Image 1 (cartoon, rainbow, N blue to C red):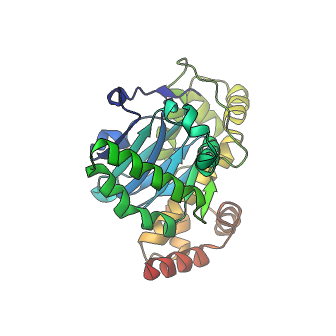
Image 2 (cartoon, one colour):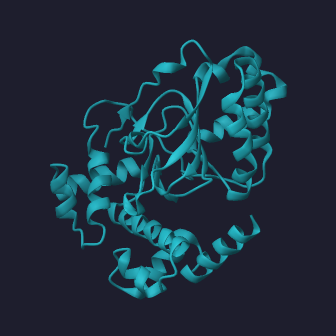
Amino acid sequence: MKAHYKPIHSLEPTLFEAVIQEDSKAFKYPWHYHPEYELTFILTGYGIRYVGNSMEHFHQNDLVLVGSNLPHCWINSEEGGETSTAIVIYMRKEFFENVWMQAFEFESIRNLIELSKKGVRFDNAVALKFRKKLLQLIKLPPFEKLIFLLQILQELSVAAGSQALCEQGFTYELSSTNNMRINTVYQYLQNNFHKKISLEDIAREVNMSEEYFSRYFSKIMKKSFFEFLNEYKINRACRLLIETDKSINEICYKSGFESIPFFYRQFKKFKHCQPKAYRLNYNKAAKHH
């Protein structure tokens, strides 16, 4: 399953670029990679975020750092009609490879950049502290912008409250061949998660035998297809828990599960708590902020 290479043309000759991403096409761009490091802060909207073999629901104030050439995409939810917008900072590899960045003063930032190989998600409480700063960064002149970005990276590097997205790491053979397969899988799940999906169904979509697809998917994503499918459904359930007052049983079926006990087991597996606790914890955090 191959990702698209996405060139970031506008970086030359600067070390980094900070933009507000408002074009809906950016949130429909397929799974892709680029040598630039990417810091993304979601201003509005929600959907599913894919980073390496990690898949999570994203919403307003989501803050993630993606390492160089780590495949990723943010797919805006079509439901509700709200378009996602974001502040995105693209940083060239040379930004962190210069001699001055190897100095002792930047040790904490270097550690953060090393961790970004797995993708880093910052907790909501941390992300909220940086919303105003990231909006301010956009408006600064070039030199002040560079200094301010270094300050932001330093503060993020020492902030308590972050998580590696690909906990077991994620190695990916960069290639342009078969680059539509992973996106075909994502699109198929998005359109058919509420139905019963068989291995035969998904293998047919990517023109593979069931056995070959199963081995291939597990090798690339470090998890089986059905584990990936259940994780996708749980992330759909999380959004419904957060954004609606539907009953947990109703959410179970709307997320594509056919069995309530199985839904509870899968929720505990991926979110380490029960659905009711997840909703309560989110509501408490939302009131606090």
